[in-house]
Length: 111
Length: 118
Image (cartoon, each protein chain N blue to C red):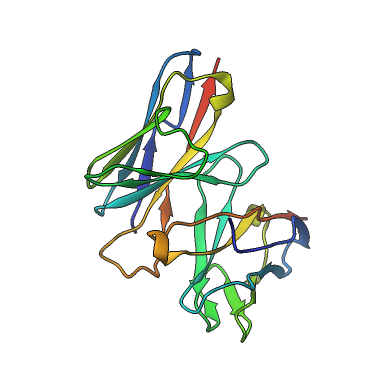
């Protein structure tokens, strides 16, 4: 079973920051939090991952709480092309590193 | 960067026939690949872990005799849907990681294969 819970849907205005929350209260000490997104009828696209420190790359920022029980993905300036389903995943390295997907958050960026 | 490629991207087959889907790692050797299935409006469901040179590991509830997985080389895993029926119509996706990199690096996904059984 997935170790994460996310709101099923969110809206965001174009050009504004999109903040997508994720709860992972049962995360273990060495498990990383990964974020992927999926645009309709395509394979998931990697966004970012982290362990306990905040991370930033050209796509997004990842903020992980100090107790690691939750995190937030931030898209700083959302565009219409960011409309997708966003998945927060805790990766299980004890089972070959497989990714177990939860239900994700369907983000709609509106003009 | 590393790329995982699937073929075909779309396939339509008749009920009762078998369909093979290929998953290739293009610039790295993948000892392990994963196969997922996704129904409309649903999340990805892990079907099995494909291990190079050994038997695949199937998730609970997935019929190993119906979904045959072969991982005969370090760059190719195949999923064969045998005796396909309309309920097998779905979006099938594979993923792989580069074993030369630390475990805490990204897994790459193929573009998916849309299977329609008529």
